[in-house]
Image: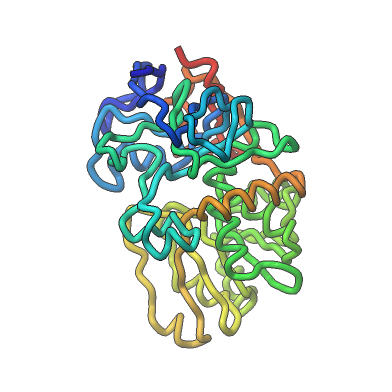
Length: 347
């Protein structure tokens, strides 16, 4: 079996360390990718530290992967050697259920296969993108347009699609007032994409310390949620609110900011439950919804949209030796706005 150099977590409490992992042989429908860049997502940290349940270790995280195709299986038709490609949060699904057949593989009724820490259809445990290479079924590999550099494209495979999907599904666009809660890895892409869609965009952040950034990224307005006056001033304002925060917040208070028939969509995934006061929903025929990533077709649409509008992630490229330091900085909100690993520094 081919091998790969990678950074793996040995346990829920140990630092990620350099190791060697095995990748499967390239099968008939597989694509072998030389990984160039891998983004660091907050969910990587939640997963390797066991916040979302026990894991199988050693575990190589990373589901924001950008690279170059170096080999394809004999029956591959969607990609060829030399293509610029990406892999996001899933690498397989049943391909047979009604959701998969509708192009919504992320909601596979038999469970999609995550890019790392998941049991693949062949029984192996998937390992992610903090690695020199990866082998993925061609149906779960997307094309990165030439207009996007690979380093700024990598975070689009999670942060980009996670915000693009609900913005598109709930019709963000001209005439719509959209609020983005949190200006981090997800939130900064939400602002860029909502602005490019033509919506009037407001950032709701704990403080005003990132206000200048938010306005430069495309926000029309910026408010501090630590100020109680914000919730009074903005009551009944928004058609759509995207909550990107992976921590517990007062959902009922944010629901009051929605207009009649407005929707609050949760894309952040805190470990704790998010209680909701029923009257916050009933009072304005409001909706509290959730959204994951998009399907493969929609992920390609997102990349093409970002290329058309010149939207890449705001990144800080780091060597692999700084991964553990980067984790601590993510937890301290000390990154603007996504760490991306230069995987040529692995090994």
